[in-house]
Image 1 (cartoon, rainbow, N blue to C red):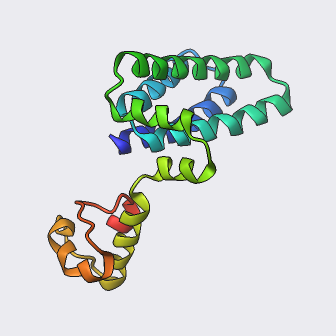
Image 2: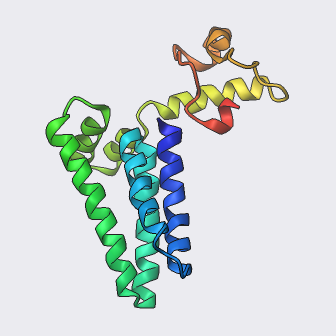
Length: 171
């Protein structure tokens, strides 16, 4: 799910730039909402965050150029995404994404916000770095990350996971 969400989020700015540069926009009009739906359906926190950053960057660019037509399209896309998030929070409050948005809204400090956004990823990244440092050339082998984790328990502590939550460290 995270890969699908990140794909949708990273393709959204590419779609925007193609949409703005292209003269034939009719076929491209359907792609943007599909990418937003992909991010929503994946439930990937990282997908939402990448999407938000890309929208902010494009918004500032569109405000500077004064292109109101495309700015309205971008705003409409974000309203659609916000509506999907609100729907999920209201009608599916038990999902990880709903819980994440609830914490995000209620977060009182930057430290709490970082803890909410990253969750246990910092510890998993540290563990992944230890495993990568110990096996720099070929790694631990395909599908053996979880099996080999106990070998590094004295270096990483009681962390057990089937991946390092980082494609770079995991591969």
